[in-house]
Length: 116
Image (cartoon, rainbow, N blue to C red; front, side, top):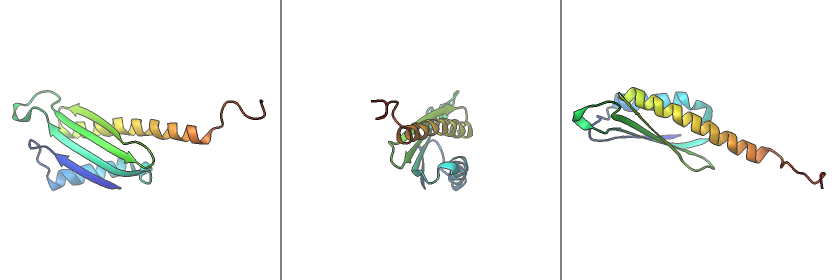
């Protein structure tokens, strides 16, 4: 599983922050480790030095094998809340996508040849 982390000019992309995000993603999505090929994380501060409520933003895009990429965005008052909010949204989206894929592949149609 490849993980890319990018920050804008207003957020210092320190090694500590990058390792923290990687560790959290691996921990949160270990269940899907064989289904996800790539994560892209974008951290930004929309207001820069001005401050403000919910001005930190985290966008996470996951690329599950065999499916279209799934992207989510979460805004919060600080980076940690933005990261975890985006991970929660992504987890729900992925569970929905994977369960949808399993149902379409593993179930029989409502009609069968026996009914005809």
